[in-house]
Length: 376
Image 1 (cartoon, helix red, strand yellow):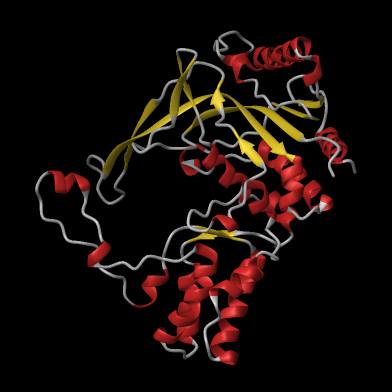
Image 2 (cartoon, helix red, strand yellow):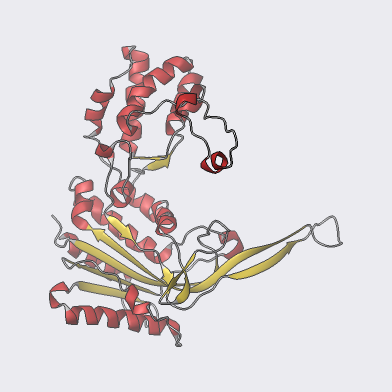
């Protein structure tokens, strides 16, 4: 059992011209906070960058989860290539897939759907047609742990080559419960709308990092030169971009993380140290070839305790517009923390900081605090 209930991480990272996370118009995501336009990075985008990072993969030691809609299809294609009939492969995969994703509705004219917009215009729209062959194995995204992928292969191949009859979905479902979750699934969770028993609540909550200063989207007009034609350009276009000092917040429910990891404290420690490291050093991959927006956190603060989790986004409700910006933002963040603990003494936490601006603290202090939070 962990010494504290929550581990909270706060960071300030400056990015110059960047488009790390695009909206549907291929421009940096933005929002209004404190009546001021800001840039933001979605939690989905930054969590993926952290999840696939080298540090997290190293901490997982090969126990890496995979999120894909291709897993069943690729297994089926492999078995067909090995000489099994498509019909037989589909029959043996179906109950195993049902045990994971729930019973699937058949697709066909009787349950297809029209496009609402076209239907409203009176247009005759065809129904969805059934998928044929192995394409029927392509469905919704599903987050598989390594142990689950190995289990699926074992059950399907055994039933297909040894038993001769497909496994029963209910038998498979019982065995799934004993399979360990991958560390990344334990941290970030898994939603299974059609099979609630396999849903895993993620222990890591991630806020959308946003600029503490007023930030607007700019446009970078560019031309691509045609090397074989010296007149004019071969292509013209524009990229949206922005810049600013981003504040980010992460909360980890330590009790839930340990529960998801079946009580493995050492695995939790490795994952949390890796998570803290990537929070401070890893950025999303959007438009990196165009902007190379690679920055380390200027400031990282880690806290642990049983206090109700809280971000310090309110420290930047009024945008930072005073130089030096980073020092001002750090001061605002620490003032917000002090005011919370002064107003609510029972909500105090134990904290440590890495301040690159003042050259105070080191990541070793963060590692030590994580160990303290876990009681190791």
